[in-house]
Every structure is written in C-alpha cells, then in structure tokens.
Image (cartoon, rainbow, N blue to C red; front, side, top):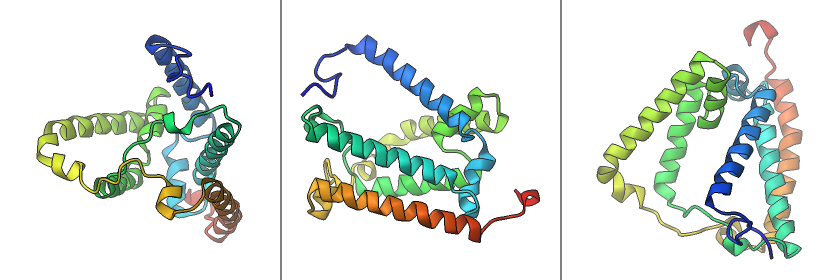
Amino acid sequence: MNAPFYKFGAFGDEASLVIAFVIGTGFGFFLERSGFGSARKLTAQFYLDDLAVFKVMFTAIVTAMLGVFYLSWLGIMDLALVDLVTTNLWPQLVGGLVLGFGFVVGGYCPGTSLVAAVTGRIDGMVFVLGVLAGIFAFGEAFPLVKGFYESGDFGRLTLPQALHLPYGLVVFLVVVMAVGAFMGSGWVERRFARPAAER
C-alpha cells in the first residue's frame, strides 16, 4: 500500500496545500471550459433539455469510484485510510434541500459560483457573497443548531454497508445505473427540447 499519499507521508502539510491549489485550479479550469461557469448551462438541468451537467458529474463520480475500487483491489490504496464524512442523516437531508433550492434560484452550486466569479460574471460574484454570508450566519448560529447538526448519526456509513452487499457488486450496480441514466438522459433531452430562442 502506498496511497492515500498524504497519510503514508509522501508529502507534508505545506506540499498538500500546493497540491490542493493545483488540483483545484485545474478543476475550475475544466469546469469553465465545459461551460459550467454559466448559470444558463447549469439551470438547463431543471428544464430537462440539456443534461450535460448531470452527465459530466455522474461520469466523474463513476470514474472516481472505479479508480478507488481497482486501486484498492490491486493493493495500491488502503480504503480504511480514506477520509469519509460521517453520515448525519437529518441535517444532511435538510442541507441538500437548501443547496438544491439555492441552485435553482441562483443558478449555481458553490463550486461553479467560484468559477463564474473568477471569470468576471457578476451573478457568480453575488452568489459567492451569499455563500460567504450563509457560512458566517451558520457559524454564528451554530450553538443554537448544534443538537440538530449532530442528529441522525450513522457514523462512517457507505453504500455497501447500508445495503449489506459486497463492495464489488455495488460498484457494478452503480455502473449499470450510470449506463441506463446516460441512455435515458438522451431521450429526456429530446423529449423536452426547447427552441433556441427560449434558452
């Protein structure tokens, strides 16, 4: 085993910050080049006539999942050392709803809003200011919501654990689901296609 690299001492704290900056910059660059710095492109998901964001993000998830699975199977990565956020069901459900509502209203998620802001889009800058204000407000109100924030604690829960299925079978099922979703998304886009003037 030689990964995760940071936990096996391949580099220290300072180098990890540089690596994170380089990866983040690259991620932002490719988001912009894919058109994901545009609120019009992102909100097209909700009109169901352009599911590019869904396809790209699902592809990224499946690629990462397959990479981690096979690196573990080959003995290169120790999955026990991969950081997982604990599952706090109720606050995470509410957080997902709030994020989704903000996405529909503002046209961005936090990551894409940063991409838009960096490229000079005013709506992206306003959205980033809103995100920062929300973070500040949550931090100030945390003592009041701490109990709810920590509720529904299931620990480090993964899909194979929750479904009581072998890891490899879950990976296979997610890949099958992804293939079906990609095929279905093409039909949905054709079904809900809008005239160019309405986009």
